[in-house]
Image (cartoon, rainbow, N blue to C red):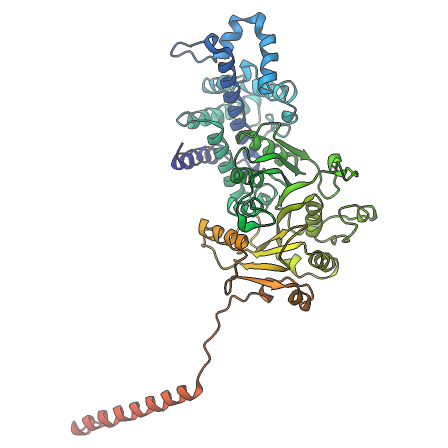
Length: 534
């Protein structure tokens, strides 16, 4: 499938969503639309596995027969169905009964079947609870098919769902629907819904252009970035993963076999479900990722609280785009937490450094971490200054990257990327000031591929460039009170040429002389004509 086809598919799906959601809030309709897209993926994947398993026994349907081949086979072999499902659970890790497959749901929608809503409800519950894969538990928990937002009665809700699913089926029919295609469509829709969600978008979406910078950094050799991309990553972790797009970006750069396992954590239940769907839609097997639903700041993931250093989880790469200046409630007990004990607690008004220290704690000694934060972490005083100073003195802050304003759907403020390492070779900090390198868009500013490549290349080779990048010694940073405000070290202002006052005066004298000579000539002509002189 070409890039043009992918864009066309995304545009068609978004037009369907925009047309059919009516007065429904975009965030609410998003969850229905993406869940149906996911059901299509699960069904296609399962039916393809069934066809491989049955081989020559897979039924061939006559033209016009809209039943699924699996439904036909089950009808012909009722005594073998249970054993066959056991076999499929072992091979594909999940099962979908014929009546819950997308092909049947789409046919019910096409014929405006009054039982569609009830069938969908049963299907979602079956997939969550009985299909076998533990990854599916609670996957559709936030999808309320009986919501009054869909209609005031069962009949109107059922009709609405029929219209949405029929339009979606027709929109997908003309395109190849392999996992990559559906994954790209899913990602496109998430981005479009984020664009219409305003501040809420920050809860679930990191723009692809920024994901590209972070993933480009953490996939390079951590100790010798100039050596190029790492051959493999055993693990990558995003502790505020949203819909999972940042983790998938890292996977895309490394290749499907380049990462051992993907780990994520997400507090919002709806977004947590989106992330799990997003992983599966992009062909990540349920054994290749673990997304946990829970609060990062209180560290309620038991696995992360392992006290034995030999068993404590550590990651090759940590990436994150946590909520900016999030208000939290640090307690004395949290102050003794292994993540914060040596640094102190971030202030109640801004948990930025609490998020940073959480991720940094779980970074391997030879790993690399890239995190998006507001500029305030670079220069704010008090507790944040103490944490920043210790990180600098310990040689953990490797690079500071300033980005342009208005890149996010959720906020117009400029942000920065901090790159941290537990063991870094250069005894300096690289500053990159990319704040003025962007293209202006209608609603958001845009980083082009060239802008992104320039940032990554500058980091990789630790280049210096006037008004763009500079390596700053720890002595100079100490002289500045461990303040990392980028403009202290890189000025983007053009240096003005010194003014030669003697030359300017000579020019003015010559100019005055020329004016007088011209006036005298002009008056001579006026005198000959008998006109008043100037």
